[in-house]
Length: 199
Image (cartoon, rainbow, N blue to C red; front, side, top):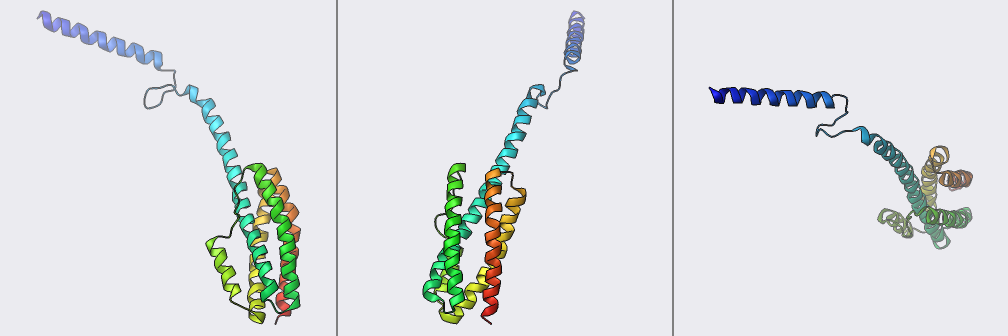
């Protein structure tokens, strides 16, 4: 009988203690592990800001990578025009590509160094394949294939640069894209005119 009374008293004490602790913790924000989450609010805000900055930086870097690769290809193909093209207007266009894209590439390299972006210094396998295809062509066949590629490439380049010029959150990238865009549009107009002259 004594034992039963002791067990009953112990049980009441445990229940009382548990209720008391629950009342003390009722106002605290807790996670599933019972830890207070109040202290996480500043960390979460900082993480959100950092994530936004990282996203902006990654978007700017992605632009620089694409623009850099495209610029390398334009110069490489422009140099190929000297030995493979037949039509004088194609040759003139190729010279313009080398001159303008060499200048734009130099600006992009300086910008990339300032931002600690890595941009390509050699052609990708896919781009090298395009170069090799054109290397195998001479005269009128080369002219047609090259100008077809230039019209298509500059349409894609303009889309890329328009997006950066309008929406980039990196002021320097935005300024570079906006500055280069008129030249790319002029290239596209020229490419279409030269392509039309080859028919």
